Length: 334
Image 1 (cartoon, rainbow, N blue to C red):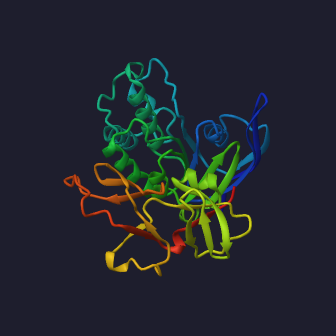
Image 2 (tube, one colour):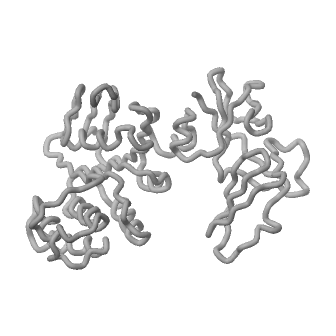
Image 3 (cartoon, rainbow, N blue to C red):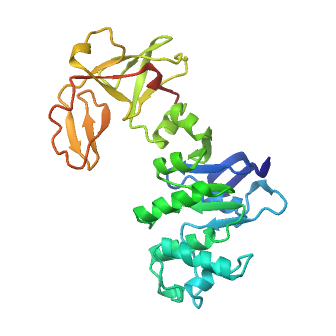
């Protein structure tokens, strides 16, 4: 059942089209991640859904009795309220249970002096206090603009647990693709004032459909291609590497993508030419991260493999060849 409908909304500032003709039906229990580069209208969209701003065209239709809470990117605070007064202000239930919940959530977010004035808080503390206010006695719809900004790892883990157990609707702007993948069952990808992809999160990651959508979901390996037949392409930006695809290569496909975790090492005894999508590693560039090796193959492809914090040498871990399963090749338009 739709509890909130976004119907053909548009927003223009001066001559700049922020977004145009956006429509979306939101069902009870949906968790939607909104991803896009800065300046694409994500925050403006959230403000319109929260009815803080009005669209120039279209409308937002909300079900009867549906309450909406909004966490802005840069919250504003009254000068004379204490932290606890601010968090409790406007709550439907003004009782000891809600106050206890407020203190618990503030503590989880690293705020311990509940009587301190809001005007004494740093920018990061203000964002955490505003997040607490949004989460205490939550409404049916939570709209969060980059909620993990200013949170440490433990706070992020707590927030993820809270949002996973939340039964209402979540609409969240995030730049963290892992966070969106874990928390949101649906994605909305914004680019240049329009929605370029909308649907189930795992479906979009598995088949983003366009170069822009692939980049927004974190795919770093993208090459222009030449179609060889219905299931073979030549990657022009990867030393003319020939690749076999599981999906049919349509005539409008312009590029191929490979996610950095989708490479598999090929054992020395398996280096026969009959292996599909066998790729020479060549003389790679290797960068060490705490828990991963970043490996750039000689043809420019980028590969990530796991490591332990105690491993500091890649000797013996980098094969002469890797391969990519045909079903892992992303076929992209645009």
